Image 1 (cartoon, rainbow, N blue to C red):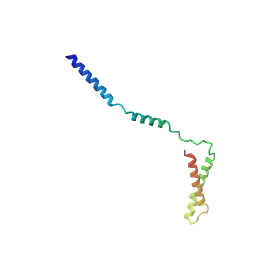
Image 2: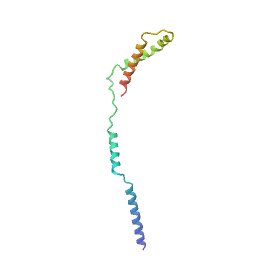
Image 3: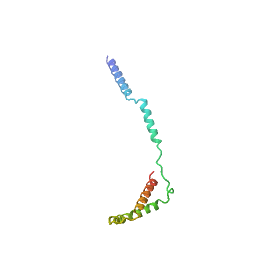
Image 4: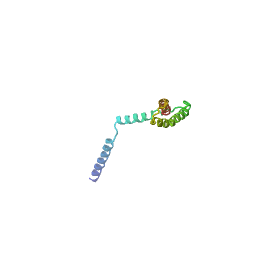
Length: 108
């Protein structure tokens, strides 16, 4: 009788363990989605890096931009005294163009 009870208990424990394992299985669709996500992560190309020699005048543009920007406060002070320098708008436009060009050359 003890053998029968022990064998019944063993079989019931074994079947419950098998049932618990089968309920934790991952459906194939989720596995495929995980694999596709992992593959997509590996396929991302590296960011584009501009070669250093592509735009040798970056330093010159930056120096010109700094020089122009330093002259603006003096001219704005003249505007406050009622004098409008004729090249102020041209300098501001040049500053804008230089800054856009530098930004485009430096960002990937």
